[in-house]
Length: 290
Image 1 (cartoon, rainbow, N blue to C red):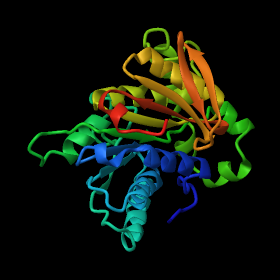
Image 2 (cartoon, rainbow, N blue to C red):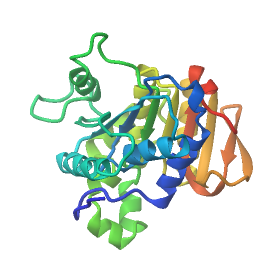
Image 3 (cartoon, helix red, strand yellow):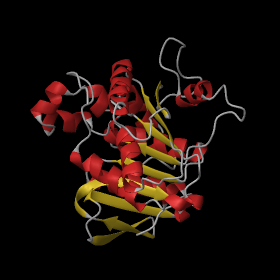
Image 4 (cartoon, rainbow, N blue to C red):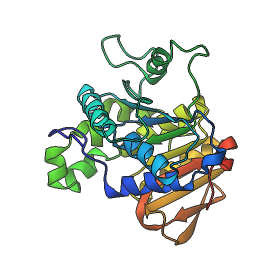
């Protein structure tokens, strides 16, 4: 993988663990023939490239033609993602023609940004699919490893090597959006009662999942405390039939339980809290082994 200083680096082992685990859980014979996967805050594109590899490695006879779209606000990250895609394509079987990377602002709305800045997600997806007959499609699976470190944690606990070689843009939510999240915390049911600046992206990600009719969502988090807050948001959203927290090693057999909003949820695997796994509707028939 290509990686320049001050741009999001290769995904961590924990990120790779939950992507691989999800790919193994999917019951490939039940997936839609044209599976659509959206990766928000894609960085250098490691998640869609790994997911593409894992899907076909676990099921060489896969009868599904997955389409992957990675989205990021950083032009440098998008350029690196395209370089990584080109490198991966040299050895990938099957071909990676259905992996695309787009410039968009996940936090923006259609009316919130001037034209010179990255488009909002809706506009970017509409433009991407404008040549299609049926307009913008739904996205079956949404994955995201967003900036989730608060400014305080970035200064006090983030390793110096990470501070020096990864951009704050990829790690810490923008200050203007943190302020907005604090202002609307008491009016938006997806916002936690006590707003942590590191949680800024998650209400937006959950809203995008609802709008795009996503059936499976997998959102990376910093630790168990944040996992509980994000899982609580998902419970309050009221559309998910399954809400789980996955630890660093989700494939391990250890199981725990937490009660959030009067609802019992599964905590799966070993290590710290690393991702929140959400399933609804048709997606419940796509996953097995849980």
